[in-house]
Length: 515
Image 1 (cartoon, helix red, strand yellow):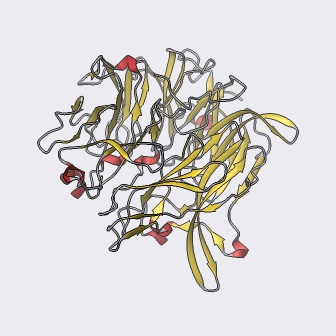
Image 2: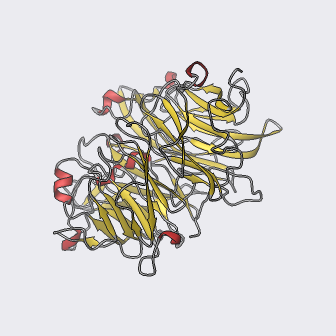
Image 3: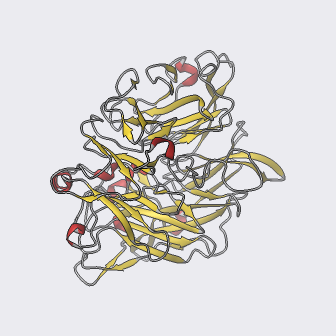
């Protein structure tokens, strides 16, 4: 499978770049060009925390990485992070440089512009404030970083909640021409009680990672918990002009159907089709309706966005009414090596129920009221506690990390997953589990990395995750992560591991533990 938007990305250099959530548009969670870190040298004697860079708020976003950026007349390998305090930081990726290379804040306390206190939403899922939540995306050709920031703005006694799409120069943090733009959208529909559904900024958070595809930046939207009237939205903007070019509503004639996926970004296949998963909400597609709650959805990327295919679990009504979101995770697209002649193009996902779905991307399967027998494979009770955050895929193996289980590896061949894991990490991960991130050199030296609720960075041998290579509680005085942020994804690139915390970007690599 040719994976668009892979870690190297387009451009004049072959240096590894991490431009998007989970490294590539297939959302495999794998950087297969890591030549420094190996299972032999990732151990407590050779590997550990080498420095950290302080920030002003929680880092919910996955760190992104761009080499050879000219800042201040010098070339830097740069790691970019964004915080819930509405800040974006560019740090030297290799050394603690005495502060950020640049730092941009979207706040103006004297002008009445602040972050959104979590208490304003009535929801405690993003704490303690809401600013920048979804992982940004970088266009390396134009040198632009795109992100969404939420603010609370007071003027003349009035309070407004605003969502803005920003386009920043990667070298300086300066706004590009036409940036920012206020997020606004509407679709025909009866869901809001009239003939039009309108995007209400206060009702939403931009939880999923951003997607850049064919010159369009896509933002996906979810509710604050399940509070108020809301829908799942996918809104696209021209990357150059920042003019809105496409809008999709998952439940135009109903309600809910949020797109949150524990931060996972929509996936894209080599033909340019988009894949996303909706959470609990109205479903009537089987009777010719346009509402796709609790569904895996394949969309065209041409405007207007339209549904090409879908899969909805047979027990969708039970899942929806009991808040067992199918959409608590996104999807991972598998290479053709995992498929068969009858099912060459596969994708996998799972939700809160803990059932793994293996789907044929060419025809997702629709809905069957009695069972999921129309899809390639369904594995009930495979992930105790449910899945929050995407699985990863490497060497014909799927890696899942559930909320009451730990990291597990499921081999796949000839379009069939093993019905039980081939290996299981030591111990159990508490809620919400983890989002695995993999480094390898081609098909060798695979390492699965994970951040745990206890504030621990783990590294496991990808060939057997029962073999833990390293964790940050070993030599804790030096290696302690410090704190943990829910659904965090570490980034592994060029011999280093970058992990966001509640107040810093922690950096791990090879070096003398006595340092």
